[in-house]
Length: 164
Picture 1 (cartoon, one colour):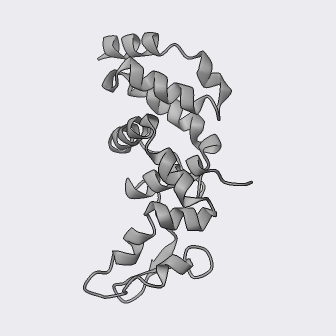
Picture 2 (tube, rainbow, N blue to C red; picture 1 turned 45 degrees about the vertical axis):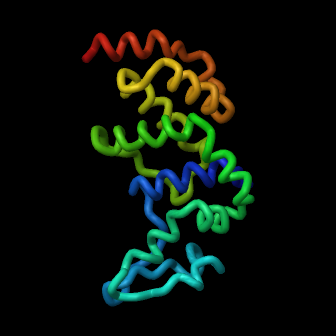
């Protein structure tokens, strides 16, 4: 399945939020990306130094590396990253990471694969967001999960607020 810029942005956010990790191993206190799967041409210029063992791992979480990994246009992904629903999604995932056991994910989940989980978290943490934030997130996610278009976010926010 061909990956899209939203898939790259999702993977970037999942990685920088420590929800998923790049594929690699520790070798003598130094993180090394998997040479067959994770390592890309952009990794070759990153210094590998035992005094900064996470440097390459950190690089593998960045949007330019993720785009190279998924073969997605970097410019399109950077443009997509500026859209408002990503700020809401980042906050949502951080809340979920602290409060609920996260579902097991495929190595590089697509938005389509992860959409039901995003909707579940949005329902669970609706009281933490404005209705506008949830509606923006809902409009975006409905492109990948059409059932999301029918969710009444006003009612969801009110219900979750009453539960608190």
